[in-house]
Length: 443
Image 1 (cartoon, one colour):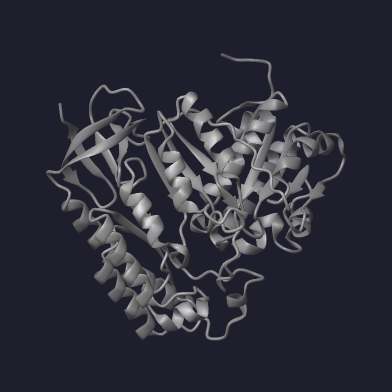
Image 2 (spheres, one colour):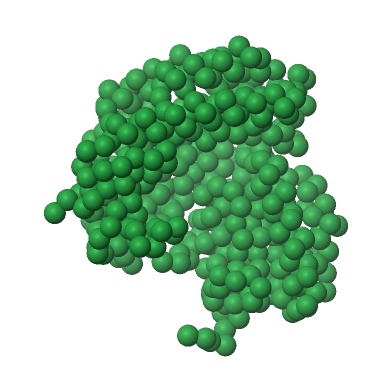
């Protein structure tokens, strides 16, 4: 039904943390009287929430900002803002302002809670307001976002990252690690369940580091999982993302003992070569990573294991790359998120010598993808004939006549039937694809 309320639209690039930040900004916009629209062209307020982890994400964001200039020219009263990680880079906010003077507001990641104050200020100004702070507050605010339907919700448990991987921009644009109090997290999850949420995904740049800055030394990620396990009405707990260096045996045991935590372990290894891992400053040798995988598979034999891989890191030789291929064959990751190294301004690796030529990076990425796609299909085919418990999410976005859901190990399962969203039900797997499974409901 049409209303007279102004409309808002947010374009989001990047990770789940950015998606959660977009939900927070939408909640602030709703408090200011706006309502969501899927069409940016009819919006009275548009925010582009940016990512700078890879150059492709930056290029997409800047392209979208440029495209919105025509809409701003046609409707001068339209509010147009840029938020997220890109403005948080030193000097980048001013670059964006010069390239896009049609913007009303440019803000970073450390002062998200200032948006309600900045919105009316920027609307009234006749120039671009730039509000980017260098460091997050010593007592960070974790505002709740506004969801647009569904049975799943993000819940942020900590912000920032204290690791200094030489390729990664995240510590520079998200700040140091700061954990959220356990009681606040539990209270938010309980509120979400009361609103109909059946699955939560715990968010952090490194969830395994949760609690290290909390005075109570018994508080860590494992104890948080056990607290959330006791929330009545909550059916599934997921989390992202992990760092192998901080994944402890206690955490593995907490997941193995749980009836709600997903049997999905996302462990970014980045490379199979110790020489490359040292240049990346990952903080673990590949032998430690192998031991961690073995511990997980002993405790959770049918766990899904996924990873991140970077090809073409500065100094990577053909032998280094072959070690990555060998590791993928050995571990048999269910899925991998694979990327060519992308130099990020301000990170040590951007200035490293021995940068790998683009054509070599492309060729290595193609070889890696071919190996991983084969393994992903083979691992899915191993599930044929099994019955898995699926949490129903609703109609598939690409096949509306088919329902979609996730098994406890986070595999996507497609099936037909008339089932209420949010239901847990058994589904027998009848077909396997590289990225999805298909099945039929077991009566």
